Image (cartoon, rainbow, N blue to C red):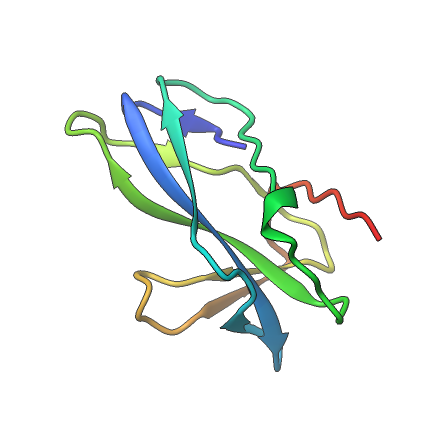
Length: 115
């Protein structure tokens, strides 16, 4: 879900990680998954992971959205945040930086899982 976007085109990368000590650790995807968003405005974004044949043997994973690139003109891309009491939001400023934990906060994301 994007709550705001004034870029013509945005490129996102979807990552899935194992959790170790409450933080993302080992990546679970064999190949990177990129999603190109074309057009300005708030919208729901869907990414189908079915073709990745992702298998998770633990109930705790982190699904992350990485902002990879954008068109030349624009200033804002935003994902909505919720404030549920028992959620945790993890964020890092750049792919090589450390994760920062924000308790009682979560990015709006819906995961449909099949067993």
